[in-house]
Length: 129
Image (cartoon, rainbow, N blue to C red):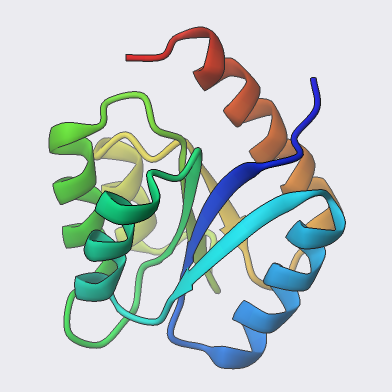
């Protein structure tokens, strides 16, 4: 399946990570919309209607878990990946309970993560709401 034109909303307050991730995703033919806080992310979600969301947990203004809960209330099948620097913290467990699609550990190889994102989008396409 061709991922060209698929939109990803990338939400993280760390500019360097956003730049790196955006570059990697665009190299894989994704259209990337970025946001650096939860309040703006919810606005972008309404406007852009992305095919997937990559969401940082720790952000100013609105915690990523609150954003996840808010998105899930309306979009049951939208792939939402939680971005975190730690793989075993309590908030990761909470995110899993809130139906996060998967996790992106900031220190890991992003190539593998992009494959996981692509797979999740393909599955979601088959089950459009």
